[in-house]
Length: 320
Image (cartoon, rainbow, N blue to C red; front, top):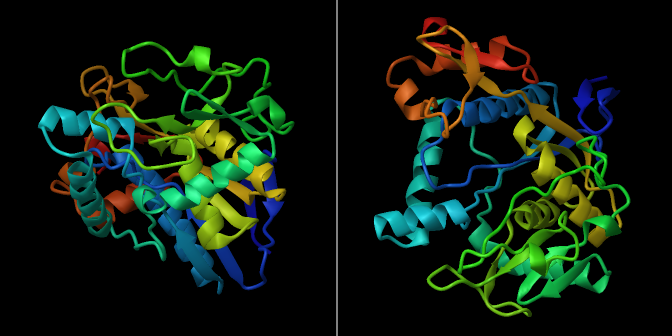
């Protein structure tokens, strides 16, 4: 019997797949606006190891990993470089796959792209509106967080104390908070802004919110419930909390039976010797492809896998 630590239950539990002998597994993929850094790589290497282990144990594993190829960050990058969002996304999707191959990470069995699954997302949003869990406001569609009694169970947050995942802005720079019924509600569909990619929908032209894409694609390719949902610990809230809420409200089903999250990567400050969170805002991140120019992929994988996948990992040149 395999035991794994389930984030929602906060303990190790026996692993019993939905279908004996098979494992359905969804791990959140990249938002393709830049090359990935080694913090991202740690998550992907960790779940590559978990997938390989399950296959070694004799399970037939179906592994799905999405690509977020429409997002605010991609749109900003495109504007800075005078390119289309599609051009930016296509380039960095290709480079992500190259980086994963260089690090010895297997391709997923299915790699859906957000822009190719818009219809699936719209259908899921329509279900949520019909069931009273979402509402339309000036061309946007929001999920009604308080309509789901189980909100906060995954992250361990009290819904009355939780903060909204992020503050969104309109094209004129004004906040969207006034469009929401509650500050915790999050966007399922965003009304089109001038010059941004947009698709037709029952609520007007726009594009999907980030959280809805993983719910739509995991249901489409794995069915509900599926066995394992994975990602970095930074995705527990709000991303995975929101995924779970909208999927279970739309489908009257458990979303994922087990939640697994990898620990964050910290970097050693070369001057002080102290460790700090790897962050683009601190300008202390290292891109995976640059690291692999200096060290062998096998050495990097060994470093990543020497620590338990849920534990924080300190990265420094002296360790590789």
